Length: 316
Length: 241
Figure (cartoon, each protein chain N blue to C red):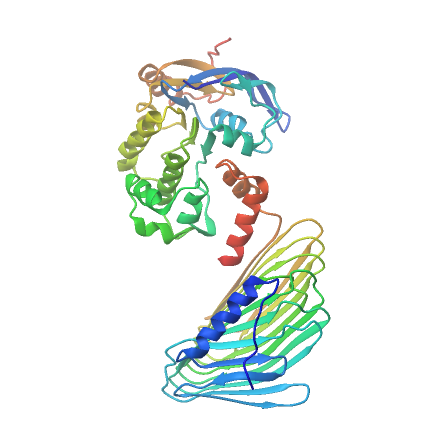
């Protein structure tokens, strides 16, 4: 199948991203480019096996990293559609062997989506002493929020392994977002999860992240940063439990809201051994007035100072 | 020459008189101190000049270069050239020092030079203005931003807080740098080491003016009377204008 041609028309950012993917195709980088439920391009590198099976309404994707493999260049995933209506259903099985490292940039690009959905069901296993960094960046329609986004994953982080992830919407409305991650940490495993969202209009987000530390010496951080404008709503459910010894966890949620936005945070932490410790920190409300006025005293307008603080929150 | 007049100000907060019929004059020929015990109303004077929220309704007027600034918001005052550094510089997670210094439209080269001037290497540009910096480092970044902004009025609330005693000379150096920009420099302090680095002082107690004059003179008064005073904020002597 020929790679899709991106003319960009009214969206230069999408053209830029598409061109980056075109460049990536020429490089020694593992990549897979998926338009709706069809693969338009894929390439493996040594130690990495990408295979797929296209069904009528879904795409099954298998990614296997062999033992003792360091994937030098970040792997490029591009899941997108330039259509308005579509249902993208991805079932991804990610199996990372022992003593390996892989970093994935997953670009999800739906610039014209209007009545569309992107569902991702992931099963991820990170082998002993291995690391997976998974950076998911979305670009959505800037004119409407009629889009359902449902990333759902079960993640097993084996002994001494690390799972680092970041989810963010780079452009456009968030739409109707439901994140559902279940993360199990084995002995001495690490999880660092970050979600950053800027929500507008009638966007809604429900973020559920459950972390289970049922072995010893594991570390976990769940971090959510949300800016909610207009009539958007965000609910963050963070569950973290520790039944093992010497586990350390932290749940952090900072949400800024303006206008009629509504944000809520539900941290639920559970510890059943005194050698372990889980903390949580949450702040919900308007922009910090002291910070705002301090920036205004440097000459910024209120609007510019707010924007700077909001982008800082999402970056931090 | 820039001139600022704080005229017959009465400011009430939570049913308490914080500033009571206070008048102060400043110009860009001298470096000023507002000195007095904790709770005297010194920082309030700065916040009233800057127009922070909760500090913009008062009796009297604030005149800058012959024009009232009473009804201007913070940004408009800043655009006239008024700025204030807070006692504890704010931590901004996610904002790099380069971002912060760019507020004043400065380029990287200029930012690097200014950072050197305040004793920070250019590598600091990429660092975030958050808790990973010490209080002293954040204070130095504040001074760098003032040097780039080149304001006409600089209010420094407790410039020595969060930095070690050996940095007092650095603050003195900065005060003179600010004066070279023909700015009105007002330090708010109860530290006699800072006080003696300034030219002229206003001694405030309980929101009123107790005394004023050359900083050497006020320094003696402050050392001999105020520091030992057992009834702080209930002064025996009030200057009636």
